[in-house]
Image (cartoon, rainbow, N blue to C red; front, side, top):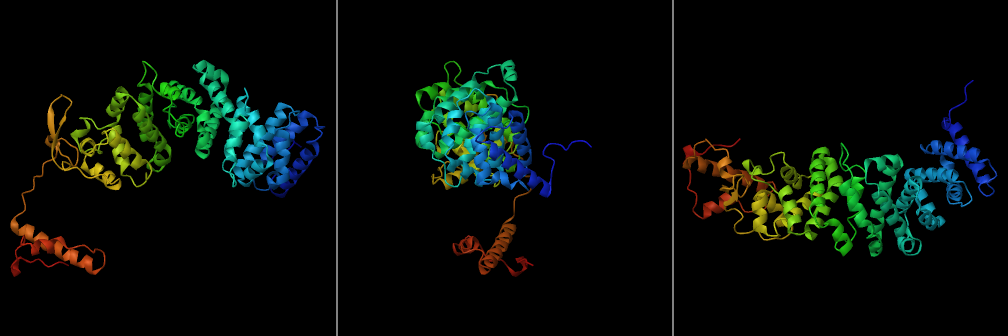
Length: 473
């Protein structure tokens, strides 16, 4: 009869197996009397059972987590034993949120910070994930002491620096797949620490040049451009002070000031194509926020690069703005998409910023239709020229009049071939509107003054003869 596969028991048999494994490992954790091979085998089996929390309850108890912590941070335990316990612990904290508080209460976070100063991609991955998950504990982990007294910032900065040294495809290949897994976990930890503990964010500023280096130099994935590490790379910068000298120099290195801007435009262009409307809000918003910061801090050459890459061009003005497939058109459409309640306003803010915070220029750049909502929400007065035709340069360098509402060149607008309405038709339409408004007022839908009634009082309408009135159904 063939032996049962490791971790194959189910139901009550699984619960019994997990209980025995936890009991056996708990008995051994003080003396380390088990053979290393047997202990590692037991931890591996426990990890397999712990992937599905059903009938694996002993792992997630206070006693089970204490046992895992004792192995994970026992200086006398072999590295493979310690790493095996860390894997089970990390999985537990993902699947069972209550175990995050157990980790915080245990006081082992200080040891995790010390251990994070490592040359092992495996350890970096596991420890960064565990510390990251601990920031979501019910009683928030106290991050400031970990940064100031236990080297959390020093370890994170050093680890990101190790990743940044891998400049070539061959060096990345030699580092192996765990390097690709470790980097996003470290970046996610950096993001959460700077978000939850902004008063200590300056301790992580040495990582900015390294993050920018990785962001600019690594090859983008073939699909889903913001998959790790690129999404986490952008996110990790959002709560750091990029205006300090070392950070600013990293953003805009001499001779390559526009390199970062070009990379961000490439990322944004692909992201707007590769993600659905439902995913854009959470995925792309950080990129546009980062672009806002880059534009604010950049020189005129950087700002021009971003304007040229993001604002509507003369080609876009061949049709109504927002109707084409260019990056600017997709951004404009998304700016009013109800499925992107966070991304939309940030896009509009970026366009407003690239219009020198000038309402008139903003209307010219994106059209009154897209500009009006943003200006209203932000209490920016609508410019007097908002609905006045203006000239814009076409691809040949000539000036052509533009419809201020749609942003389209007027000579490219589709002509209305219908004959103009007669006076009788206009009056008949006004009568229809009057009746419609009265019905809406009676139903409580509207409480405004009927515009047709107002026009009649002002003598702008004449009474229709009986044979001119068309009854409404």
